[in-house]
Length: 286
Image 1 (cartoon, rainbow, N blue to C red):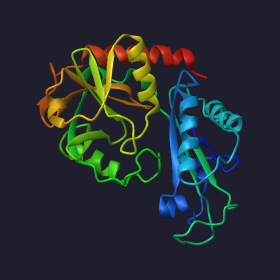
Image 2: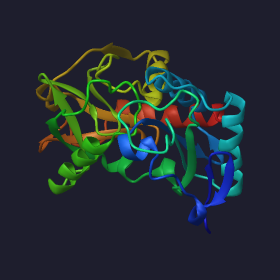
Image 3: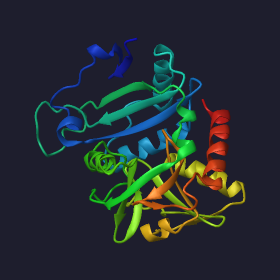
Image 4: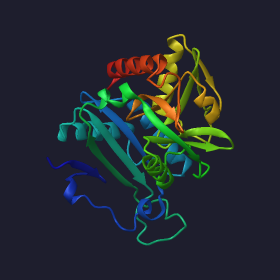
């Protein structure tokens, strides 16, 4: 089935969707994005993603191109038109097409470019990796300093994914000043005893929507949460480790730089948090 995508107010077959070569998202990575998971045809953690979108746009001096209700309607319409049960909706907003290339921002009234499309992922919540766990490597964090803004400049995270693949692993954790910042497309955690340790919020990491929800569930389940930086050596010596993201939910990590984490199998904390997250998020889906 040919996907229906949304481009600047129109629903189009993906084969007919076009964006200008002068769009600043293409030329300057001058744009932001969000990815919202869909389970059973409903949006997971949508309100959080919409709020972060507004913040990212604001940090770049851009406004919302449509109302919150209109944006939600577009998401729901794409789910219906593409008969999406399990998968994701990708949203990208750029500063638009100024008609030529220039480092300076275009006039404030330049129309923004808004694109949304679906990605079908049957069985998204039943990934085999949740039963085996991920293997990660550590790499230097060579990104720009404002990682809290969810921009489309994703070259280095892509390079990190490929470094991991070249090493026969699944992902990479980035390290800056001796401490782990985050994964290439996820937040990173370790567990020691009943204590979950994860990097505190700041400009160094993305303020993960799944992160916020999972930590709330962890506290409600009487788990101790400590938000601080941790080292790769700490992670190797941890009882368990895991990541969170909108598309992977809660995913155990069983190996770091070739060293087994804990028993080398998914730990009880990560496994339980994944169960809680999927159960509660399905109940709250819109």
